[in-house]
Image 1 (tube, protein in one colour):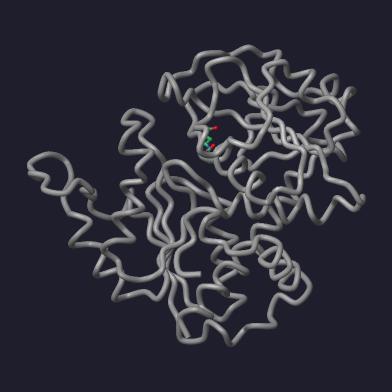
Image 2 (cartoon, protein in one colour; image 1 turned 180 degrees about the vertical axis):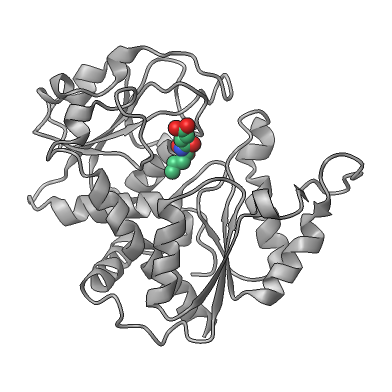
Length: 318
Ligand code: SN0
């Protein structure tokens, strides 16, 4: 593995899951692998779990980490080729990224979508410019359209909990929110579950909240949430803004908030969320504070997900 941007960078998902489980059992077994290697974590947007788990994963592998909140502490970057930089951007990615490439062995980047310019967001302009100009492996800590470390964690967590000899039914349900939110987590979860192929996978949302079919093809789309939730083993709760009417909030229908009532038709489903969660807007307290919620396990597993990915990249470097 060179870069980790999407599921397409993973030749064998199940093998990577096993690698993560091995680190969960023995966190320090490869403490020498990252010796004298330095990782840069670059944030253009806020983060808690991603930042901490990646830093811990790097430390478990013996790497040095530098965290740079470039949105707050750095110069504002320009990503457009040929831009006349007379506006508010100060430094071109062409000038910044090669320097980072010389300082680090691996570069990790979080960059949210604009939710205004669909073409730039869906061409992954920012992260692709980093890949082009840094010249070292790049790991996505959530980019404009995807959140691969989260989706990998989600599959690890499902595998860890589901022991029956059949495919689990997994439902991704849209939930209300107060503001426009990226489609990344939904896109990425759909992309990974479809690529994994070991699930009966249903996506439910109000009409006009369809995600990009390049990620959802293979899943069943069901507009009736109750019908979708029937016999679900896992329910992933997530808000996203509209992809078709790009970046817009089209519904705030609180009936879509997952409550205990919604779970009655499921197979006592485990409820997933990537966090941070808007309590009693996306998901009710009664679920989040119950044994059905596995959001904390997902977050805990972020360390092993990041460690497996970084180890794969380090193996490729050495
Ligand atoms: C981000 C998202 O893509 O959904 C990051 C999730 C890991 N979430 C938010 O931006 C939530 C912001 C809010 O105001 O609740």
